[in-house]
Image 1: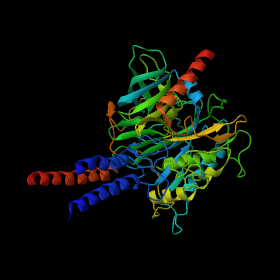
Image 2: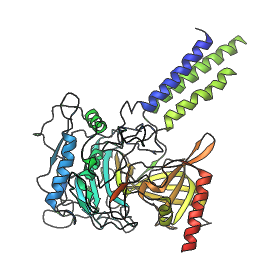
Image 3: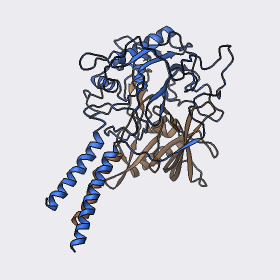
Image 4: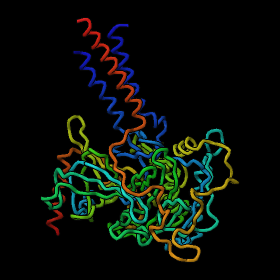
Length: 342
Length: 195
């Protein structure tokens, strides 16, 4: 084989592998998965997941709405909206007509838990409305949730495998102040769209439930195209919230949930028990005494201390690294060959 | 010589593959215009991320401190400080990670413009509007360009009637760093005059 051919092959191989590394995670779909590495999303770039993708190891999942509900809606109304939102994902029509291997089982009882935490000794995937908009166990020197946030989803996960351990959804129960802070009112809006200043709770929770199961925001090919598969998706990062279109899944959302949880044998008879057991009340003991914020077992699984982060290596960069090695090897061999000849 | 000239050419696309990564998740957050980001910021700083360190709070939650060396200050008056500490919710300690969707994120070594508030000499700052308060500076075709990270954010905005509308944030399209800083200085100067 001539040098020129070798050169061409090395070039084509490295470029090909580099492109593979860029788009392998994206395939033909626009959806992205949440990963342990996270990373900086800049511009409208293809999504490549850094680190291990998030997933529930046992996709028979429970959740519970905090019993204190919201100032804007009755507890039963909230539960109806939340149940409908999770059911939308559970009943997605995968190719072949089956549904994802995913079951959501709402708790028979509401939770008493406005704390976003993960314990060794019992957990609940809680959905709570907060006023004030802060963690009830906030330190004196801690910070509340961002005033501009309507809702945040907090996902506890295994940093090596990406297994989701617990997920909590916190919703800002304050009244919004124009130009000042986010918040309600929330409602289960009619199908024709929200009225007044209501925001559609079902739409919000459907979007957040996508994160709950490890789906990130999708990546539009052309964000100005109203028919772009991502722009029309529930997992797109923009929303007109007086509209109710986030309630139903677009094909890209369905691809995501069916790829991550391909149809399987799980059925509604499964038992949904959080890691460490179900503990609906994270604030008081059975005898009614408050559970201290720093109670043993709270939000740990670790021994405390600190972890210092540096840059992270994208998993898909392995392909690119391999490409570099191919190129360097070819170059070095050729240099060596030239050295011997000279 | 031809061979050695090819190496940088080959490394180019590989680096593109390495760094053009964009995982994304989401909290539902009010999109802020640039003027609003500036209004709510006690300090606006162009700098480089030196170090990130996660720690656990009393309630068990994991937070992370990020040390940012100050290269240029657009707002704020602390000539004796060459670093700011920014605190974000979430982080990793051993095998356990806590992710708050939409929270600001930093990569060690990257250049950023941060809009922060609430901190001081002995307390860490928070970014304004979660991830919206971080803009990343990337060198593209020899030009420093500013991008707003929308990682993890579902941006919406209430209009005058309180209805929620789609929002694209303070910097929908990338902009040259020098032009952006100039615009930012104008905004902050106007705001100072109005105070």
